[in-house]
Length: 395
View 1 (cartoon, rainbow, N blue to C red):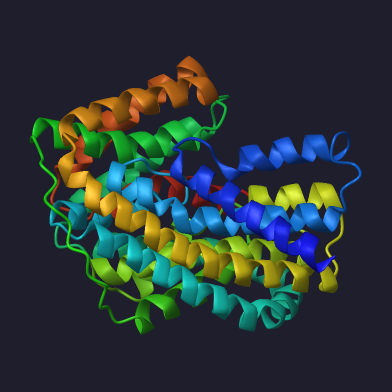
View 2: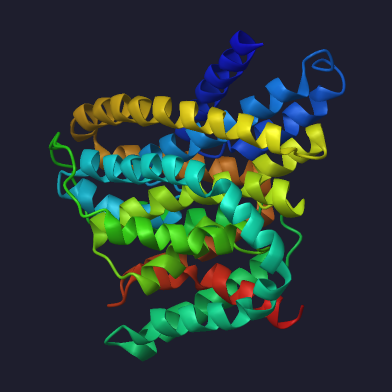
């Protein structure tokens, strides 16, 4: 049994590396595919091995998918915020350091998750209903902090509101995978087009290990992630915005925060399944489909898988980042950006259809406009925060 579990972890890590490196291939797609096979071709495989595979793949994905986000400007739904400081550091020759900061945050989060999992599960199971009732006020407070800490408050509010209106329109449409064209446009293709226009040349990258104060960003992620990991409508993006609004940090600290938050929100989604039988991520939903009820023994097994896969992924991400760092300055970045734009457009059309492509165009234009305004680009997270605020207002 031990050999089979270790094999499941290693295969999961490889699968997560693949989904992380290839834009548009999300772990949710693999999870859905695996669930459909679990009743036919994989029916003779123990459900425990399948859920260990899913958890390992999910954690590996959260480490690796920062690489294409930062080096290529291809955001995933969990890494969109990393592009903003990460791409800036890439243009400064510090792309290696940017990805390593997210990896360090993720590794810290793996060990924190092991410590917090069962205490958080017990605590949340007791206060879940009460927490749900005050979430509206928490989100309103975060939005207030985000906007009013800017010098140009009206401009920040404008970006927040128009992004929220776009998010409302997209999320209430019948488009498949609506976040794919929305985030790709706001945080990905808009930056790529700006780079092409400005004829950005990526300098040779410095291979230096990051030096950053970790306490504030890690503490922020520890406080915000449990809230967003247990409540509906909230994900790692909102958790990162919430944490950064409370524990304001610089761009390096923000990358640590995003890396830690992604791992914690993913890991806590499995804890949520155990504690309150609710799924908050596609990976947790796939596990619920396979095993139905997650026992405390199964949760311990998943935590062990997360520990092993997290450590392996941390070092794998380092090797892959080193490879990208040595190659990226040799590439014609404008030509590469055009190829990536075409690839992203094709991915959007495949998964979200022609309507998704229209969303991509609109969100790209909005992203270009907002990027030119003298306020933080994180205000574009209004595309999720405003719909979430309205969700809690009406429920």
